[in-house]
Image (cartoon, rainbow, N blue to C red; front, side):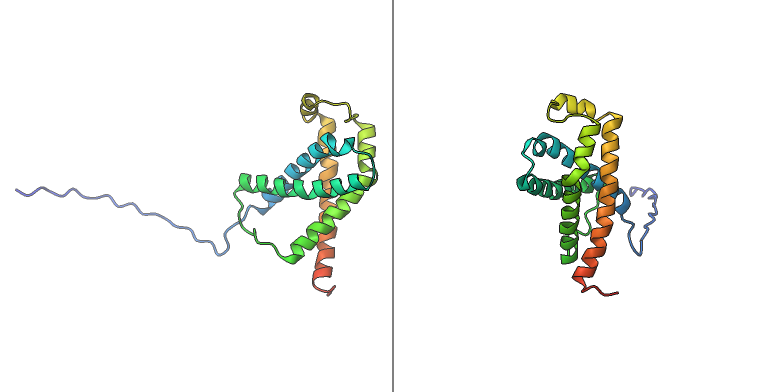
Length: 170
């Protein structure tokens, strides 16, 4: 007698197709701002603040702004798995340079002098004290102020880059 075939259970799969796949852009933008701000603060407090206040310190603030943005973007992309839009346009680079310049000018001329005078002297703090300080309300206020300034500068730079790249069309 031939072996009997057992009935095979068929499983239906449902496949969802999106016209435009949803992107985690809001989470990416918020995490990017948070991570890049924290990285910038660490670079600023541990290296740039000890330099004499001159044009070299301003250049380091400008470079730290760009570098912390790149690192913060990479970390945020890993968290939300957002790998779209890696190819950038000239308008993006124009916007980035304008935003980094404005942000550096704002930080160099007064904002950090106000923050460091109000909260803590970072020239005498150790790494362990800084890590404990990162959990305090004062530190979160500094991060909040910098993120708000970063958002305003980003919006201004986006507007200016649009006008500069496309010839200032209306």
